[in-house]
Amino acid sequence: MDPFSVQLSDEAVVTGLHTSFRASSRPNHTPLVIAIHCGSYSAHYYVATPSNSVLPISNFLHVPCVAINRPGYLDSTPLPPVPENSTYCQEEGRYLHKEILPAPWQTYGEAYGEAYGVAYGVSSIVVLAHSLSAPMTIVAAAAHAREGGRSYPLAGIIRSGFGAQVNPTTEKSIHPLIEPSSPYIRFPTRLKDEIMLCGVTNPDVLAQSERLNTSASKAEFFDGCGTWATYWRKQYAQYVKCPVMYNMAGEDRLWIVNAETVQEFAGAFTGSRRVDKGIVVGVPHCMELGMAGRGWYARCFGWAVEVGIAFGVDRGLSG
Image 1 (tube, helix red, strand yellow):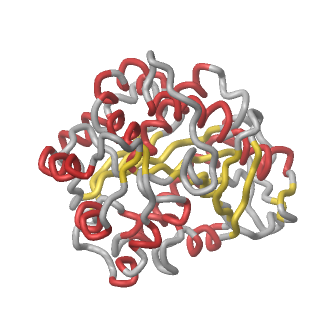
Image 2 (cartoon, rainbow, N blue to C red):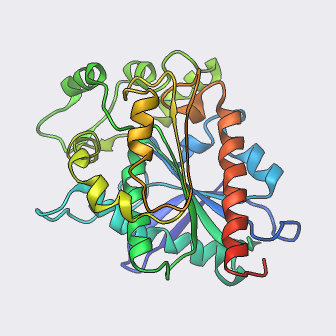
Image 3 (tube, rainbow, N blue to C red):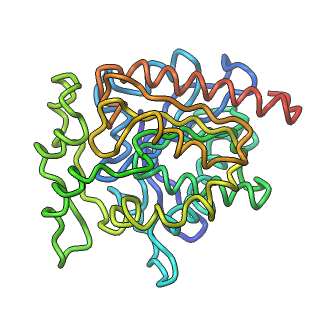
């Protein structure tokens, strides 16, 4: 994937990576997948190794992908200050909806425009979000539905690695890493591998752990793993209308994962026209980095094609 940098309407900058191939051979109703990384990673999460990468399935299905660096990660501008009456996840979700998601659509999709000399020619967006980017995606999807979807065509959202109940054992192991004087948290690589990869990944992924590791805002951890549980169902989940795909990892150590907790989370999306849910057995919290990462990406991009086509047909789009 190639690097990109886009200036937003508020003069902030969002950076990331994008695939590079032309639209001439692309089928009708092709979606643009926008991949959003979790806490303490970056856009490089989605191209961690040649095997654990979106590129093979993206190229095979002719479905382009843009992986962003969330606000404050790498060269992306930090999130504006969070108001006292709000929380980090809510503010980043609103910012995602208002500023970030419209930018790649206008750059890569709208009016079959060209960017970096590459015509993408796509007709909708499917968001692929992992772990702590999931709350922001839910807030954005709810805002999108409330506003009637005017700024970008959202065909669906895919989420993994974010559950209904935090694993208290893992939560206790993370708290000693939090320094009161710093607004950021950075995981020691070995501990992070234990929590995120759970012993079920390939050696070549472990070799990239230090390169993929980044600092993350403490506020997103405190909200996503704490405050979020008190407001997300009533304020956001029930207002999401687009299709939802939700899967958790069978070997996840950050969350309590079983049929009941998966149903508890997926069942909150009462307004969505389609909700697919399940547990992927034998994969770590970071499913994309697990031994079955290729299979997970194939499922995600295949689902994106399904809902992208449904979105286009439903709206009578020509392609």
